[in-house]
Length: 322
Image: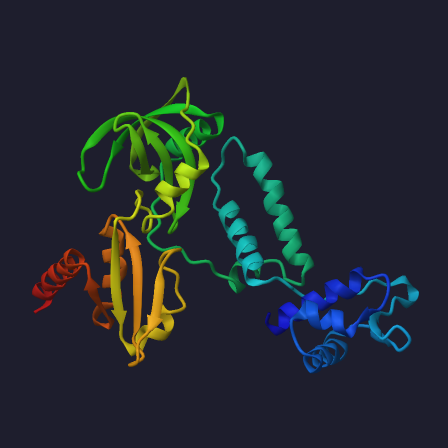
């Protein structure tokens, strides 16, 4: 817990308590020592005007509600995940184009705006004070996105024409949509592909034609979906069958150690302060892009095939600039 989390936790504890809260309980809830509790209480009284009193008989702290006034923390008191969720929702709703749900979406957007204004944010300042940046977002055709989302929620099969990036070839497929995925600012659909008779992931912006057909979608259980889609590296599906071993030099090792590349990654510092990272993967395309962005600050130790691919692309890049 940081200081702001502890202030919020103490406020919640005191505001909901019917009797004075003992010091030992506060220390346990705030996960800190008695001296830290006293310092937080002092700061809340001094800077936030918190009416915190101490009852000697009960040996506990309480909010003085003289005059039946309920004290609330001033200003905007969100943690990082709440703040991101709030502004991401507001930003997404602000970008919604006119459609069938416009009359339903506008009130939600208005309520979010009212919430932020009620927490001491001035109108017109919202977008200026917090930015959520998008990177390499591709805009899907609204008609095809609606068809995919509708088929997913209504549990119907979907017929599409799809132009994959790797083959640059248009193919016709029938899908049983399983779930929508928003990944790195782009939309994908995880689905059972009846043409290939296996689970696949499709980028919605590459769908060139779509129509829902009146056939019930095949349902795949959650365990199978998780094993197939969430154990691989990045957006690519399939159970991992290789382990990449990367070594980052001291210049970036501290920062890389704080990153999550994969839920099942393993990392450790060596005696020289470099950081060794092990990542399970199946398809190397996205992994290669993420490795190359670190340039000469990272070296691929294993497997040999991945090391050769990085070397090959590095040589091609060098040839372009020499």
